[in-house]
Length: 263
Image (cartoon, rainbow, N blue to C red):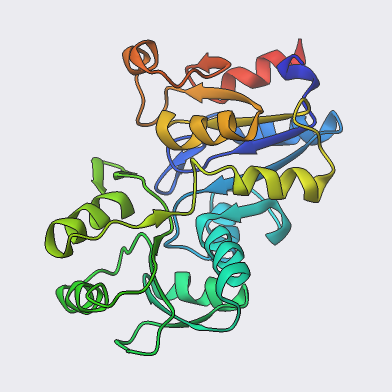
């Protein structure tokens, strides 16, 4: 199905529609055009440092009016997966205060404190990381309990380049403890599958936009939907050409889609 006929458009955020607090050109007009033509869009992010409520506020500051229903993040995916597996059991969690709040809203029983009563360990991208937190997590990883991480992204895009993301933090823990996590967010297809069911869209009607091959595009491939790799974030055209992960389309930025929709 051509891009113009897609009914559910799923956008990654960091590096795809903005960098930090700066929205890319044409994004607001694109979202308006999608709705004008009867389509739906939602935002899927591996960034677990913000809750959905904080994301709604962030996008509002950039001129995008979005509702809670139009998001699915790795924090929500983590709550979805761990609640199914562990129910109300206590989960040790390292992450931001916003991350913990999102997990609790998703029905998880989480604690940021060291405990010997936890059924599992969950690590998220932690923009509030401290040496004390890292020490606690390493101590927790000494226990023989399941270990999960919200997302495998190695770097997080910022205005001057990149900073270490959850995947890099977990590599550090692997060096310190010998343990590696089971990752929950993209490239797993969970977010896409949940949103397709929620909005009643088929695989043929759905497309995923993202700036990373090994998370965004791979998640679309794993979900069996079309993908658009944009070159506004981490990936460069030479990366696409060398990668075994093949997007359906490659565009310079999401603003190019506006021209396609108006044709």
